[in-house]
Image (tube, rainbow, N blue to C red; front, side):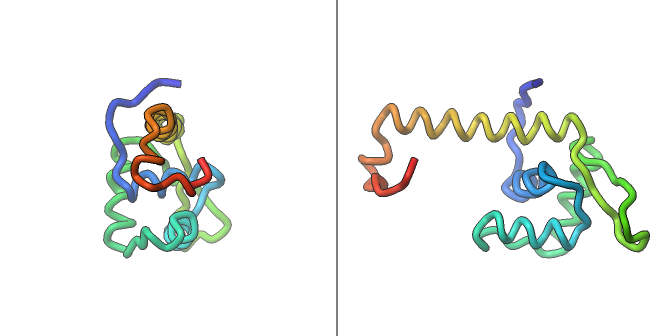
Length: 114
C-alpha cells in the first residue's frame, strides 16, 4: 500500500469509506455517510457532488455502470483504496498514541471502549 501524505476532508473520508464496501450512486452515498457517522455528517447535494468531482479529478474514485442508466455509480480506484487505508491507519496510530499516553483517562474519556 502506498502511503498518502494528504489528509482527506471529513466528507471525502466518509465518501471513500462508503465506497470501500461497494459501488454506490450519489443518493446512496449520502445515506450511507449519514448512517456511518451517526448523523454527525450530513452531506447536502452541493457538498456531495463537489467532493465527488474533486475525487474523480484526483482519481480516488471512478464512475462505473450500474443497474439504473439514469444514475451515476461510483467506485474506489486503487488510489482511493490506498487513500482510505492510509487515513484509517493514521487514525489508528493516533488512537494508539493517545492510549499509550493515557490521554483518554486524562480527558475524562475512560468510559470509551477503546
